[in-house]
Amino acid sequence: MDSLALTPLFAPPLSVSNVVTVKLTEATYLLWKFQFEIYLSGQGLLSFVDGSVSQPQAFITVPGINGQSTEVPNPDHHTWLKTDHVVKSW
Image (tube, rainbow, N blue to C red; front, side, top):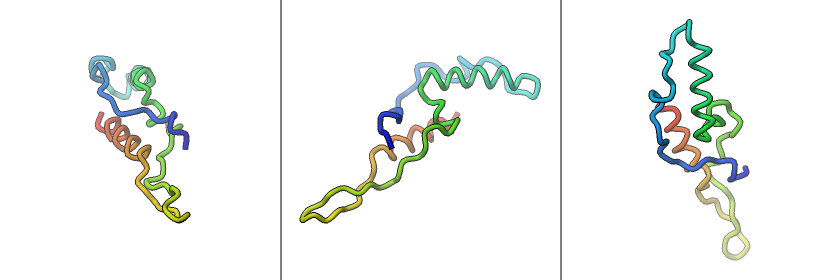
């Protein structure tokens, strides 16, 4: 997994309701979707919705003492999980 593809967790400068001004209904879905995707893209978060960035492994194997490898928590997974939860909370 390329860690550069992950977006670090940050507080977006605008709330979603200030940017996506169309109320979601059957009749307004396409306009709402367009506005929401533009917002997510601008925040660097569209990849969490469209699936283009996948969840990193929770643990990674690193070289340990005496040539033995050990599993440690993957910091990319932690960042991905927090950011994914922010997106889901909208």
